[in-house]
Amino acid sequence: MLYYTEPTTLRVVHIPPSMKDHSLKPRIRIKGSCGGLLFMEIYFGCCMFHYGFWNPATRQFKKVTGPQQCINLLAEGFGYGSKINDYKLVRIGYFLHPRTLITRYDRRRVDSVVRALVFSWKTDSWRTVEDGALLGGRFSDAVAVKGDLYWKVSGVENLANEGVLAFDSDTDMFRRIELPGLNQSSPNYSMTITGFKDSLGLFVFLEGSSNSSFDLWVLNESRMGGNIKSWSKLLTVGPMSRIGWPISAWRGKIILKSPNEKDGFFLYDPISQEVIDVPISSSGAYDYAETLASVDGTSNLMLEDAPL
Image (cartoon, rainbow, N blue to C red; front, side, top):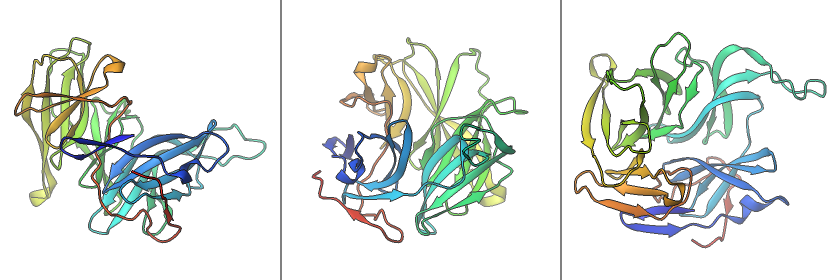
């Protein structure tokens, strides 16, 4: 795994031995990054074995016990409530009936209500959250902005357009945010949410291998006067000399994925218009800032001697 520690520096991080304490070779997936910790899922064979918090800077890793409630998962994310100093794991979906020997492969839903399971790092426990803002649909990967979580949701019944679901990591409350009315003439444009300079951003671009330009919109939120929210177009990028799809932002630069899998990612600086190659071969990218934050909210801390 590679990650940025300085604006132009890449470092290699080794996987802690405690993540490999099983006879089968594990598959490790990073699912989120927030507040200096990484949220990971570790699979053995066809079944997920456990979750984990990992701080590559301190080499601390902690296993997290999964919830007892079975869930038909729609989305998940990893956030941080700065006011309460608590990391949160969020799993959204339909609750399922518990498995028995008779109904081992029965995946029936308890009902048609979408709920969330929220894990607290401080209490080392899961709780169920029911909120009217929760709806089914197709969720994007979670985006963390100042510790709060956002998902772009499409295909929601009774809603004609795509929207954004937001999660407040301090209060465990959800809310919906409308996307800007773009009135695009082409039906083939795509939208991807991202964090951009402590705000929620939205990339708008045309699908297809010939794409070399996109717009970046930013959500302006004001807690005064009834939580007013509005989108504004921040900039238009391109056409560029190199083809790529915007997937995220990092320190004022745009991360783009090349259409050719072997070419990986590259950075684009919208101010200098410089293109920077990133020697990373992966299906995703996460922003990570080195900190001394502990992985342990209560106990059961593991300190590894794996070199950085």
